[in-house]
Length: 169
Image 1: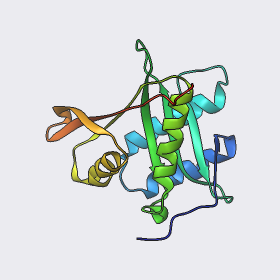
Image 2 (image 1 turned 30 degrees about the vertical axis):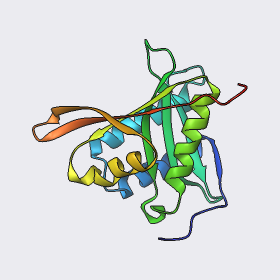
Image 3 (image 1 turned 180 degrees about the vertical axis):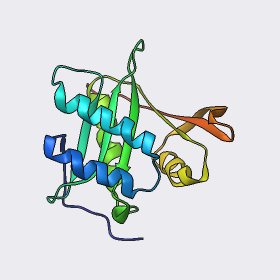
């Protein structure tokens, strides 16, 4: 295993991040073109509408631009449930702690907002094997599976992580 990346900032999205994040999404070789388009729609929603409250994007920056990012939002119609819409890391940094740092940031953010559950959805196809293992290593549990959801042979796999409130909060 490589050494963990330690010098970094997790910060809010800024306009100059769009192009590097688009490149990062493509370089993962996990997401389809349609999925990348959806990710960019959410990035654009955050960049162009400061009043929107559906999505929040955090960028992992090692000082030279985005090395990963997350997109979360409160799940409509729920009390304390948040969707983890996207988590992506530069493939050159896989296994170096970037994804875990981003997941911890998501957990801390949800906890600070008195959230209680983070939900992440993904595909059952082999190209998402590492993603599913990542969720399990980060304390998520498989909560549901819908057979042939995305297309025949491609199930929707739903993971959840319950957040324990901090004492005294």
